[in-house]
Image (cartoon, rainbow, N blue to C red; front, side, top):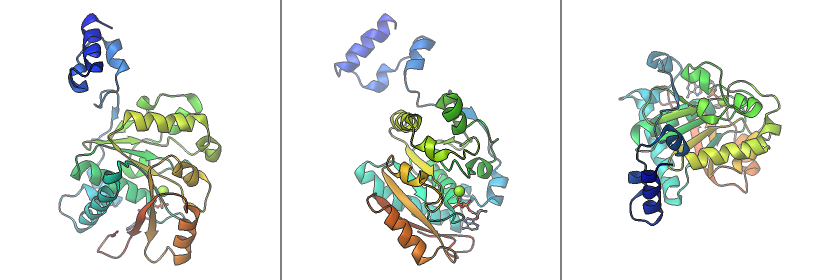
Length: 267
Ligand SMILES: Nc1ncnc2c1ncn2[C@@H]1O[C@H](COP(=O)(O)OP(=O)(O)O)[C@@H](O)[C@H]1O
Ligand SMILES: [Mg+2]
């Protein structure tokens, strides 16, 4: 560390200058020691906006009835999380096909576009990952590489060309996901993304509650959990069973998907 950097560090520690001003340019080695708020190390892929609309990612549209519903959802999420300083949200549901992944993508985009928050979207459905296919990314690399080969997280992150949004894809199916979710590497991952992205909203796309214990394990690592229910598909019993499984957890609310507003949904 250079003398200037040392002096700045000392002054910052003594409270003489704010952290932001202490982060001056120095040697590449010194820069690497600091958590970067920029996308300098992140791969960039420009998502195909037309294909996103084909895949029902209507949150990218400026004027749209469904996009408005996501804005309403975002406001409710912000109102229920900001006062508690909560920013790590798991999205799950009782069974598959209720719209968890689609809701995650649309909520993450809406938060990134409409609020001043930066957002990290994590595909934590390691058995049926599909955030990459909704956004049109290659399957690899992803969390699978982090878990199996120790690939650093910074090499897996993707910036999809939507300002303030970063994605951590799954990188392939992992049939032994529960074992992995319960591992030290998982704890290290959560710690890394929570500390590296302290001021970011982190949206975790989780598997369904009736498929495996992964969403319950993940529930212990997040601040709050939102359940997705799909109109005409999710039953009252599904909702009751889901809430019962999460009984000691902080439930943010139930997101009603596909409620019949043109293409849309409501909260
Ligand atoms: N509100 C909706 N309107 C139309 N299609 C939807 C809606 N929500 C989900 N889908 C479609 O249903 C399928 C399952 O959604 P997905 O988000 O993958 O569910 P999950 O992650 O809960 O298994 C996808 O093909 C998705 O495009
Ligand atoms: Mg899914």
